[in-house]
Image (cartoon, rainbow, N blue to C red; front, side):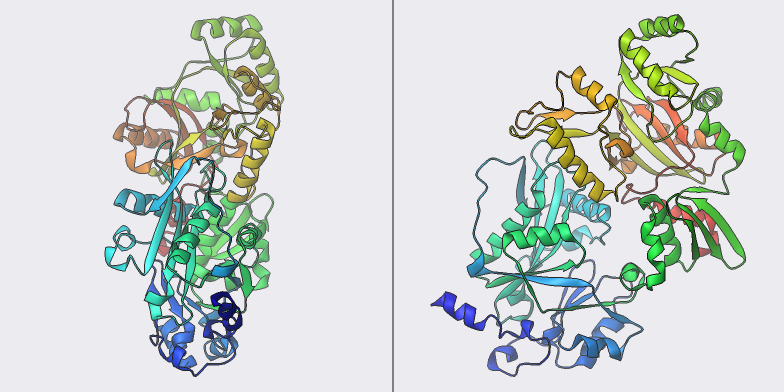
Length: 577
């Protein structure tokens, strides 16, 4: 009988009637002019407002620097017409999952992660780091941990069992607590999964957990708002039984939402790679004119008043040709910084095979790389026998005729971003790894990994299907067709570059003073305003290190939550600070 009642009433609730206000005893029970603070902005329940004017006032009085959202708005076109310079219709769809339509599907096999309530400050900071990686606005840890709002806002997190690190989060709002909802609903917000989580099924498990939480409490439905072009998320929700409903959202025109309402002429910006796009977006927020010269190559010009600066991603005309030369030739870079007192591993130029073989025997393990090149191309890491050395030299020669053979040093791969001779960000780069399921081949696992990483990095990060990956697999006793045992973690490539599938983890707060000093010394020695410096270190907090190389065009993306793009624009246009 309850199911039949739900089916008869489900199309008659105020949340689904965006063209009229229902005058009934049930709707009159709703708390008028209701909104919920979310930390990143307010969730405004439009159908609880008595007039369009009140919604316009609520959305325009506050929220210029937040992500305020008005949902379940009645006559959204009328409201936007009342303030077209300040409000816009959010290009998102609203989906609903009905209690009686949902099939509970418990996880039978033990997962590599657990789901719990958010409970402490450390977890709150990790949640905010995930928000930042996903280009979402975070919330103050104290707000997330507010015990007085537990029944109103619910935060669940997914923690990786191997290290207890937070790799995903979801927020739920209880509509009964928020505005005395006569429809007895709830909603899901801020579903986020760390792009570098390395584990499948985190997002769908978080959704299922939140759904079970609210349906156990007797809620009739759960709603979610999702961008119209986010096919991956839409597919996830539809798989669970969510159905699209006629509910619309209104947002405030502000710098945070700019990409959702900018004129179509700016579509060329969307063709930029993530490294150029990050800088252009920051410039536009400050009112700096942007002229995209060649989107494919990341070339653009920034203009403010009478001053223009041309850039290719983070390489600007402020970097001199001499500084570029010092970075471009890895031998020259190493010689210069060693003279300045910076520690670097032993290195020789490959001239004769016998000399290179003798060097290998002296140091035991080497890295072979072209003297010029970027993004890890042509590099072979951890070479320990003569046949491998010969092949690695030939591979490097395809990139540059001059080949360097360098002592292999064990440790963590650290990238430090230095702008205006100040350390802005530091991150550990880890080689790409896959985790076995007991059912999938290594080739399948790599393909799944690549699909997630490509989506998370705008197509910039993937594990190549090449001879270097195969060499690394064979060295561990595997090949592409091996079915990797369940929960086994396998590093499939030795280099940690983002472009070859590596992941990056912020460690700026943990960087030792010695490493900061070494990084600034290198940038001043090269005399370069913006650079990415690679070090190998035993520990981030250690005073020991080896300098590896400098990059004159470092990627500023993927260093969240550090303000890399902000400091870059500060350097180019200090008057906008």
